[in-house]
Image (cartoon, rainbow, N blue to C red; front, side):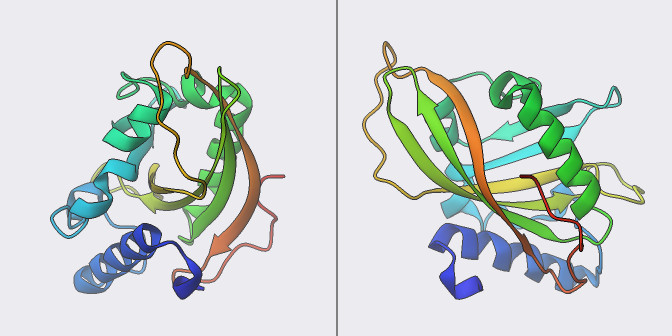
Length: 184
């Protein structure tokens, strides 16, 4: 499966797994353990989301290319403001399913913009331990790979409207995958 992934998703998965191996982890690594220098080529298409004490998902980091497509200012804002309440519920459900093993999720989404442009994107989401001592990871990191040619976006008419999840596939990180279907 790894050879079928777009290059930046392969690099992300390799760095994630290498970090786990280097640290002797069977669970999820901490955010601060990710090898950002090695991940530099993918950081523009990268984001980190964590669950807040109130139970919301909040963006901790959002890459420049993702931000170009979605608009500025999502760091430290609730996921539901970008993904909508339904997608936040789906993401929270997904975190509950993938975090304990851990395993990852490869999914595709259709991103729609005010101008009518729709862009299909593959996203690999992997669980992260945000706070030291967490028994179960409380966040995830995702790397995005546009599957369509990214059109030049204009601020005045290409305002992000929504993303719609299309397909989900678990990614075994060596601990198996849940029997429960993800998402749809």
